[in-house]
Structure formats: structure tokens, C-alpha cells
Length: 239
Image (cartoon, rainbow, N blue to C red; front, side, top):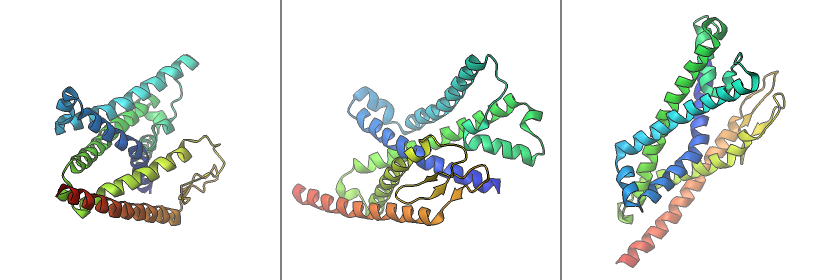
């Protein structure tokens, strides 16, 4: 059961974080193309993926280090490490320990925290590499001539754009501060997740998930039609 919970958390983490990071990657790739010395770095696919993979790994390790440093300055010592700051990675490590019939206290809080940070850092590096590959593909396709852009490829780009817009719109709902027992609903334009409270009640509202998915699909199809008309006019002007 915990495997499905971790998978759901990981999928929505990729969606929400990728909705912000993917457009930033696109801006970096587009801006670097205007500078020769930057274009030499970003135009190499392996180097491009390596840079963003290192970024994802360094981001998690540095944030974990800052958290420990702030905790030590505030309390003078580190006796408690909340694994929820690691998100899905922390709950995954704790769940695996329960399967192995052990506890974080038995293995060592510090050891378990380091394992969670390592898991989150490696996974974040892999996620950022995947997003960087998607950004590379989108940029290379847009930079081509309109005649080289097939309908399927245009739909893929528009679907990514629609998913990013929907993710950015939903991100503030998860960043807002709520109490731990408020049963706060989340979702734009349809409510698709209920945060729950101490008595439980958290989970996905699948009607909202389907509604938001249909909305993203409809927006993507509309964008494809608009793109098709603009491309047709561009081709006519060229001839």
C-alpha cells in the first residue's frame, strides 16, 4: 500500500516542481542560444543534462545542510529530525524500515536522515535530467521550420505547456500555510486533493483529477489548432 502512496506523491511532485522548472530550463536554453560562449555549453546535449542533474543533486544536499545548520543554531544540538521535510523520500525510507521490522530510532536518526537525503538527491537529479531532456526536445522542435513540425509533436509540446500552466496554478495551494487538522482542499480549477487531518481523510478526489486532466487536454487541443493556423500563414508568406 505504501508503494502506491509513494508513487502518487512522486508523480505529483514531478508535476508541480516540473511545471516551474521546465519553463525556466526553456528560458535558459533560449537565452543561451543568443550568447556564443553560453551556446557552446548548452548546445551539447550530454553537458546540458549533466548540468541540470548536478543542479538537482546539489539543491537537495544544500537545502538539507542548511536545515541542519539552522536547527543546530536554534537548539544548540540536533536531537530530532523531521522526515517530512524530505517529502516522499522521507516517508519512503520510514516505510522501508517498517517492512524490515526496524525503526529510525533503532538504526539511528542521523543515519536514516542521511539515507533519505541521498534518496531524494539521486531521484531529484534523475527528475531534473528528464525535464532537461524534455526542454531540449521542445526547443529543438520549435527552432525547426514549420514544415518539419508534425501534428503529434505539436500536440506533445502544447500538452506540456498546458500541464505546466495547470501545475503553476495549483502550486500556491500546496505552498499556503494551513493547520495540521484543517482538512484543507486543494485544486484549480477542480478540487482534486483533500489534505485531511489527524483523524485521516486525506486522499485524491478522482472526479477532480479527471476534470483537470480533461481541461488540460482541451487547452492543448485548442493550442494545437491555433499553432496550425499560425504555421500555415507563415508558410504562405514564405512562398
